Length: 290
Image (cartoon, rainbow, N blue to C red; front, side):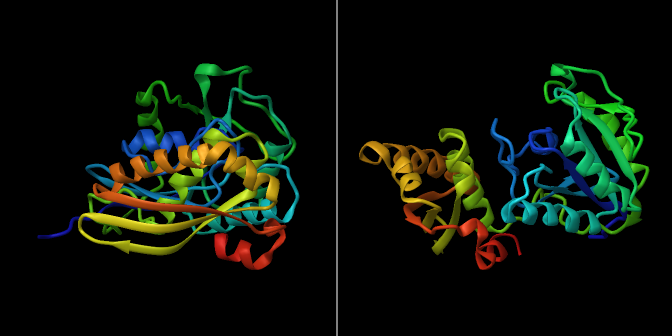
């Protein structure tokens, strides 16, 4: 079968935490690729996903939200975003119109100032907007001509049309039925991490990470041993509080969702360990984001 050329290119999404990037991804392709929660900084890795239509294949990078925190962990996340932008051909900047302009937007502008890559600025969350954009800044004129909202995915069509103006003609890089190139380890840990963000308060989600120690897959069964690491003993106790009820809740919801994703029975063993100051441990950060 002859493979036809399409308009193909890489597109990086950038914005402050909770600006609507991950929701846009999931709604556009109709699959859950990026995890979401009401808490900021849910996305902590670059998630690659593929959008196909009749004449284009767009490979999107969903990047971690840019914030003004300055510890090693969040500086590492910022570097992840910067490196992703370097690998993109087009940048879509999400401007959250439900929140006032702030320092996070200035950091994003500083990053974009040094980039020669075309930038498409859009207003997101316009259905819950608190103030009207555009805003003229000292660094960069933010003049979005497009707006999107998750409550009306028809608004996505204009953005897709605008992106296509920058695409080059080439052979598709992925099969037509692909919507992500995430490996199985990433899919599993991201789903479990989402449950932690949903069920725990501010401190715990940002002080945990997951690693898969054992993974066995057969046509009908997915069996895994996953370790959930916290920074302190008190965080561990919060997660396993009241006869392990909290941990059981995470385990149950994650297992059921993984069975839907992989279409097979899932055996999930989830254990909690303490690794003090892991967010300052370069070896751990390199394993997670390197």
